Image 1: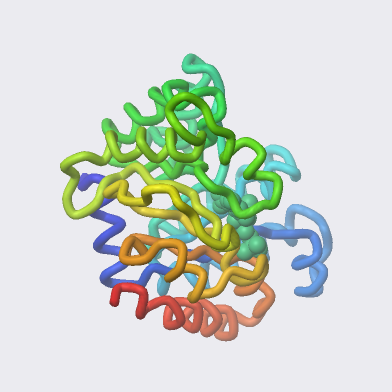
Image 2: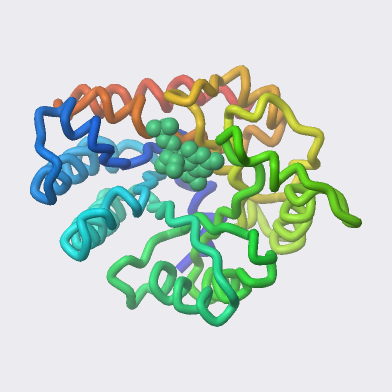
Length: 274
Ligand SMILES: O=C(O)c1cc(=O)[nH]c(=O)n1[C@@H]1O[C@H](COP(=O)(O)O)[C@@H](O)[C@H]1O
């Protein structure tokens, strides 16, 4: 296969940078006239896949919304992953995993090894057990041409308490960015190791020149706008994947309306290359 960074660059070029989150919130199930059960979860999630996976570059299912239904919910997640990939979208599975190294290996096997039923193109990871604890995931990405998006400056208001904390080597966010920069050194056109930076953070003094992609949640329902993207990322916005879940999903259950919402989202962020 081809490394994740190259595949992502191609997806952005061919389909655009907009990422649709496939998050079956209970409120959205209700809004779609569905019940809070696994059959409704399946109907919701696979309708979204049918509508958006053929037209956007990246989809981002959030695992928790499936896990809450137990093994049958996880079976739905497996179908979301497989059917999205079959439709040509890259799947960034949002699991925000992070543990001691030996357990990180099991997470890597679960989500990044093509032999796993949950194998995805990339996952989100939490670096707060120390960046080195993610080494098994980094190695798995190299071995399987997958990608890793590590939390740096998250969109929630509680994030700065940890992420802005300053030690001898600078802020926690800055240290994580340094690690990502090292992992992506010399990669062309872009590295496979990305940073999660919320569209709601206002601005940042951190050096975002990591030669890697950015997952940018908080765009849409949480208030982030294209002006925020330009202000936060400057020329690095070229490698930003603005991600929106609720704002797009609220257009359902009509497949055409969902697809149009995804297309509108894509059009709105097209000019960020400039
Ligand atoms: O890693 C993420 O995707 C993420 C990081 C972050 O800082 N903030 C954030 O909202 N997210 C996820 O992005 C999605 C945001 O959903 P909406 O607010 O509905 O667009 C959810 O799946 C969140 O779990």
